[in-house]
Length: 552
Image (cartoon, rainbow, N blue to C red; front, side, top):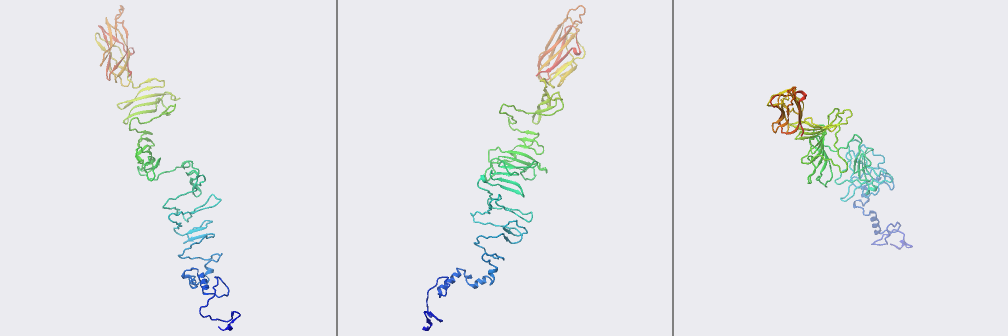
């Protein structure tokens, strides 16, 4: 370069530098008229590319990525602080590290559902078919939807809205689903389940109680219903002998053993859904649980009878025993009495009010009955009647009336006499020919003229009188009672009085009969008189009579 090109230490004309001249490299960002070295330019280009991928580190590649759209920045990307006015199609790409997205509402929609979001909705997820919102996490992640609001009792609401009535809201998990309000009972909230605006069920968080039909349960489980309504357990069909119920008491984890008590309903299978109510108790010393065969008490589904120890009760209360000393015990531990009360408004005298029956293999063989007395107006007196059975014939044997008097309607008794006079020949024992029964209880002991037969073994009382007259004998008359099985009973001997005016009409003896004897069943008895050498007359009618009664 000629010297004329240099003036005042300045190059005043174009200079072609040959070789490899060097100069000072300016700092990055220098925007003066100083010479830019290759190092300065390389740094500036590197700062512009800033580790961009090789497919986007030239202007041509960037233009191709924007589809050579000269309006890309104004129509696609939002300006700083501006609003996006068009649709952003990400294709298969993801949005990452988005930070906080702010706005009034947001919608993720693949197709219109026809439903309308509730007022105040911030985020909508929509499709015209099954719609799923997935919250995913790792194996140890805690997944949650957190609702927080200050100053409002309703801290958060999960709503389900459909366009028809056939859809359901379903919570599904392969693990436990836990509902928790707070960690301490003192400040715990309640879990409240409503149908529209009506509360159906509540878990009382402060007391750990479950209430159905009540918002203040007083026990661990309380089901409150209005009058005429029920809480129902069981959903079996009406198949005969099928049963369902609730078990009570101890249970073990993860099995159904050791459930020793239950209340169950057994279907009858009559098409009317009637069933027996059973109280089940398994008394076996094992791990088994109750079954229907363990029924200890039941109420019959068609008769309403109660059975204890039987599932086929035949009376209002039927107690079945299978060993000695079982049955009914009424015991008072204090200074009090016990009672079995019979109460009936009977209208007639002598009518049974209450009965205690003893059966021998189903046949009544004895009974004690409390019966009405004779005052049917005031209805304030009564009797006790004792019955026994002979040859399947139950009959009253002893009655204690309202005055404490004992009578036995079937106690063997007979009163008899001869209707007319009877003449007794001389020197022979003659049967007193008793031909008329005045009264008898049970079978008539006067089984033939002159003969009395004892119907049962026992002690008998015999009373009466034999009136003897017109003795023509010059010595005596005798009277006795003879038996078929033991010794005779002598009643007396009578001698004639001397009377010159009428020697044949001087007798007028009443021979008393008054003795007790022990007889065997079917033993016979006769009364006889004897005239020494002449005749005498046994007066008939009421003058001579006899009574025989079993005492014990």
